Image: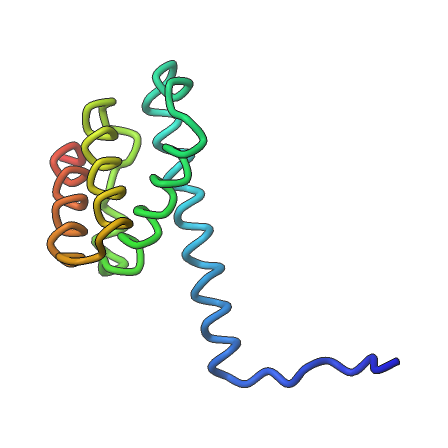
Amino acid sequence: MDTSRPELNDEDIGMRAFQVRKAKAVERAMDRLRQGLKHHWGMLTRKDLDDLSWIFGELWAFEKRADWEELHFSSLKPEDVQAILEMARTLRQAPRDTVETLERVGDIIRARSV
């Protein structure tokens, strides 16, 4: 039985660290969204939550860290969430205009972050 660990290079470690930071940022964003939506949170389906987590992860990877930190997910309204969900599903089905879509998602959140 081989008990040795597989070799990890710096690139593998860096990619894993990136994924962990991204997952934590998305978790915080989702928690803030839940707190802000209050009773509206219960209206979101599992698919809605998966799509929101995915688009927030894409947005985290796209945004500058300082800009990401300025986004107030807790201020989003149900209609904002529905608009973001529509964009997320469109982007997942046909990944074109990715930058434009992520900018629009960021703009929706920024509009509530003032």
